Image (tube, rainbow, N blue to C red; front, side, top):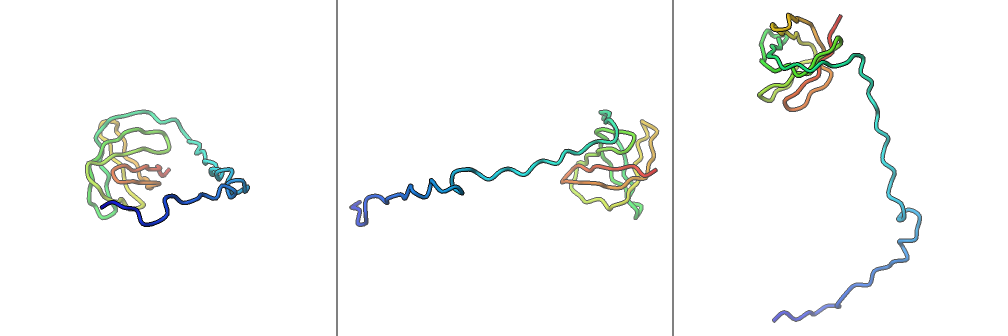
Length: 112
């Protein structure tokens, strides 16, 4: 019923393991270290992102520095390149550029 019909085991050619390309794994690429311009201050405050179209997105300001901020949203969505950040609790109203974004979080760089 469960009879094998083929060869029992395959022979492995171990001579290939002595070749230089098989001996060492590839070297990982060096990580680029990003140097922050300013120290981030942790904050947990509701904020509003105003889009160029006039639409608004409510989010949470996670941290802020003199040069930028990190904001998290409840829903998915992409931000345009230029936005305006408003945080009433901190009396902060700044124009900003979206430097990076993922599913729910965005990094902003303040303009002048």
